[in-house]
Image 1: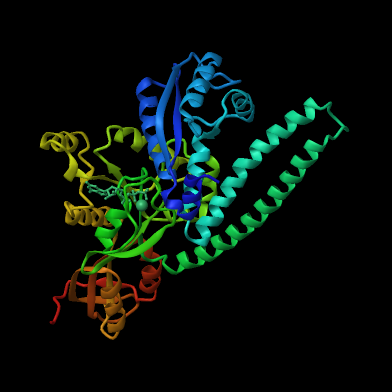
Image 2: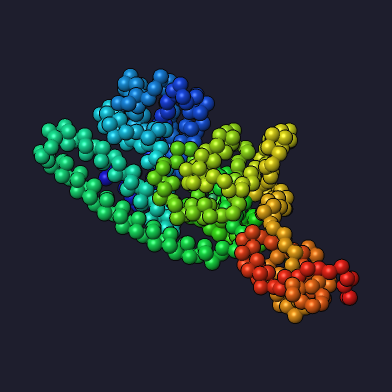
Length: 451
Ligand SMILES: Nc1nc2c(ncn2[C@@H]2O[C@H](COP(=O)(O)OP(=O)(O)OP(=O)(O)O)[C@@H](O)[C@H]2O)c(=O)[nH]1
Ligand SMILES: [Mg+2]
């Protein structure tokens, strides 16, 4: 063992980061700009995973090479580069097929990583709670299994087909079975978590539930902290948040909602990962309103908005009332930009979660957004039902209350009753209408009220 590796063993944090080259492809469907931006993001992902990007390689091809991803000449060039600089790994912006991996491995003498593998790695190192860990492990195994399966079919064909099992195949079959067993265990665990969460959510059915959604690093957790006075981890790294956290937020002294922060989205987020995170993302699926947080300083924020909408669609969240929240306006270089944004996106609320700018406006807009769905009722209560009237005061917003003369159906004379005009959340209509159904049916008479 040389001195350097000895020191590394002693103090792993001193370890030199692994070096990486990131690789992307421009094709007629994927523009140069898109690839540049995707690679910037891939670098950020690599950095989050603890690797240091030392180079970038982009090729322009009419289509992805199904055997080697890049053209074979480019692969040879890359191999030389890796050799010369002693690069530890090459990270591909697209997911590689098992065949591509095998072919590239023949030429490139270093670790090969693709975008999904990288994202899964980050998720695995960031998962804290038991739920997040289970979800990530499931996604990792699903990712591995598809690769094994394809490789296995390939091997079985290579080795002469039906009935002739080579030792390699047996091993892979065993692996597949073990992975399959483990996946089944994890799925059962997650189903149990789902059940528990569903019960918890049922207890909160009558409360307004708002979820923060958005691209990773948009500032969701920071905004959560500002709105709810919370201390959720927020940092300048991708996927700082993997679990959902729920806090109470007062939009005004008498107006309470439950706000949830959750995992951020990214382009090409692996399907399996989205699926595995179902328990966490149920929070989003079952909330009443979404706050879609956007980092307007990002040069590609509009594309980020599209990716988030696409991911939501994938999750089956399509018609949720959504308020766009344009964040980090404090960092906009010119005031003119803010004006332009306001003009282009008149419905978005402009805030800075970090500096607390626009937060009151956001609360007001959110409240108005929720109140749009409120329903109005007018009810007449007999004088002895003071508790019912008090209950209306407690659970709804009373717009007007007065004493009037009214006649109950089949009654001989009119009597003095309390007339209450109120607004209530659609979540309470069933309960309140149930209460109103127990009241006598009154018809107001024109006789003036006595009081
Ligand atoms: N300048 C500025 N920076 C902000 C603002 N809001 C958040 N940030 C920074 O942006 C980075 C990401 O913030 P987070 O709140 O962790 O973002 P997130 O959306 O929760 O990210 P993930 O959990 O990783 O998806 C942090 O470095 C924040 O300090 C803001 O209003 N202005
Ligand atoms: Mg976060």
